[in-house]
Length: 374
Image (cartoon, rainbow, N blue to C red; front, side):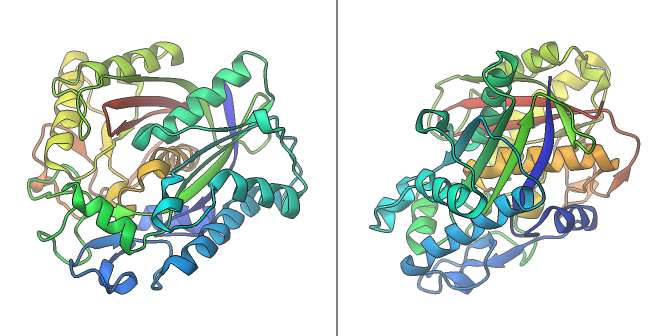
């Protein structure tokens, strides 16, 4: 096992861990419309952004640096930590869209070095990109480094770039985004009968995964698994076979059974097909084990942060375990849930022990992790 000892976070509902906890409990939405930040786009897209100011090409790079410094400062201004490896999830194609020669690794290397005096060898600063499963994959690989005695402390970072016109248009062109069918402020509706596409969010998160338990650790990484069904670009295999394999292998490594789960943090993107695949798998597992854990869909609050979603949601899971609550899935009520799963549309307070966090990415990349309180 490995320990999540430190967290830094920024997303549409908070720019620090304390506000993140508060707004998770409140069921706050960070949604605005794209014409606020990208007025040159004629489509009125619901979005959930860390910055609610218009971002042009010149300002995006500065926003990225600002966000990176913010999440790192939430950890490294409080204490000195020896970092053995840095695992970074990011999308450097953003540089091409901006016609700018930059990469996230260079930005984070400079900030760690000049702002916090942390130097990591080149070969121990590793980029990982597995689409929407990146966050879970980062934690899986960090745990392997610790488990195999290559590291004591691994810094894990996932950063989804701020939204700007070229980026939003790229996403809109694939046809998965909610463009027309939404009520203002309530567009992201995972597992609802009225869902009609994902709502783009942005954000970033970082964590320390450590071999040694600190006095104030957040949660324990207990197990995880990733595979790729190579089904098609936009979705995982429809029968959920490989998703199920991830869950079974994660539970096996964690040495727990499905009925011990208190809640599942679903990928829940609000897309028609992917929500159906995920929900039907959970339905099947519920019936098989005669156990019905709560299902939370954080994207209802912060939108789909793509590369960063798994790590932001893992951070949310760790915080919910530590503070004994399950954040509500907002924008729907129980009558709108299309599937036989227990979506908690209101906050739940209870003593928690285990949770399962799911992430499924473009190209059929599937992943899951189990976090524990003790």
